[in-house]
Length: 169
Image (cartoon, rainbow, N blue to C red; front, side, top):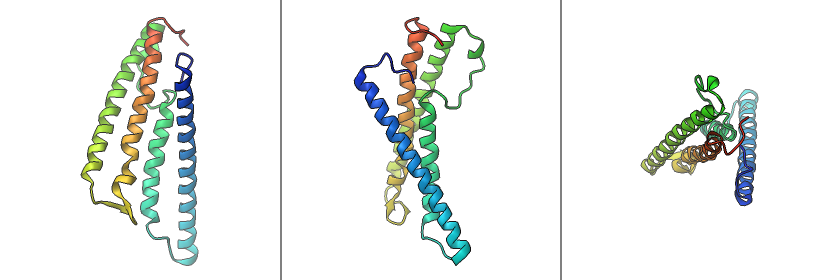
């Protein structure tokens, strides 16, 4: 993500958030692979399993997938349909990307809001063991809010490009 036009404090904050995202993603992925491997070995060799690991693994898949989506949105590498923008000249392409960014921000904020509503409706639900459902589902609004934030930064970059205030690639 281009950060040369941002204040140094914001650049540092973005780097810290990126580092935390990567660390959490790596940790959760390693935990998921380790738990799945241990579960497979215990079932095949000893005919037993760890209680509630299957539910935890399902939640870890959700968390890793959404954190991966956040990581992909860092550089605007998330899934996008850009059929028209491929043939547009530079500044018009940047303007089209800005419109796409606005749409993406709106959808992500709507999904974050709906995720909060979903979590509020899930009072009293237990995800697994003693973990409440709301704690396991917090990744939903957090991930969509982070994606909206990332696309807000990309929107500022694309607007500067479309107005000729920043060089085009």
